[in-house]
Length: 139
Image 1 (spheres, rainbow, N blue to C red):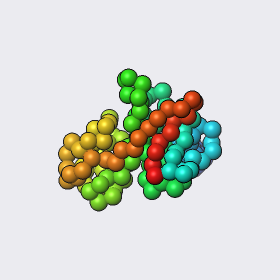
Image 2: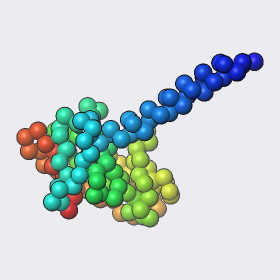
Image 3: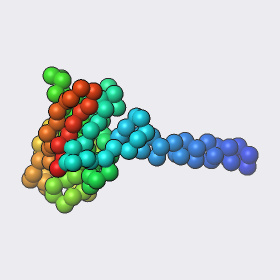
Image 4: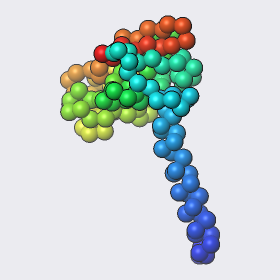
């Protein structure tokens, strides 16, 4: 049986751990802490802010949904809008597969539909590397 003091300590530790989650999520777009914004139709992302794992989820002001930037083996990049074309549901990576939370459509890492109900691929944006910046043409 757990005494009151141990219960409160355990509950406080759990709350403290959960309080860190939103802070980490807000940093998913930029390790420098500055919010990213679309400027003249272009989203500039410092290369140093990209994940070493090959995929980085970016949240930017002026863009309706998150973007996932994928670094390919050849060093090129793809930027996918994480918004399902079927009914505009949010798309998240789950076990290496991009899945719509609303109706279960799935997409590969290039944004191509692998299972419906969506009949369209995820929206892709052109990406270029200029110096130490990744430039995503979103507008």
